Image 1 (cartoon, rainbow, N blue to C red):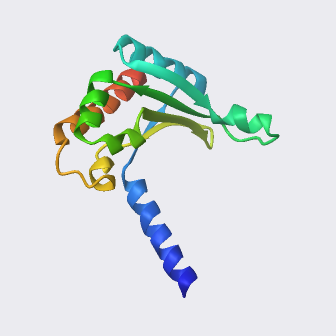
Image 2: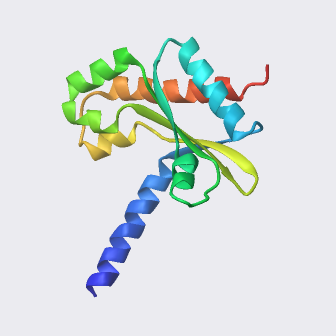
Length: 147
């Protein structure tokens, strides 16, 4: 019975989080998509921290996984406002965009910052969170545009 309850809670949790995952398909390779996203982030004068290459880390441990890259960045102004509003929101920072290959297709995905309202029981910070959400969407849409 305990196992059934735990499994149910896990499935509900996964389902809730999956609903907040925003996903786009890219026509470029993983490397080209990441390069384009980083370029847009830098053009917008956002703070770019790094790209975590999960597949290369796995390879160092003798495991092969499809290309999987996490881009870490933030808008310093939004970060300052958000942390000033509620310090625990720093647990969800910096902002992240995932680029991965699955079944020969390349995807870009991120969790909508609006999930922070539930995660941190926020009644305030609405404008900041909305701005963060719009920023992620703009960065991805600009990166997907053909030149």
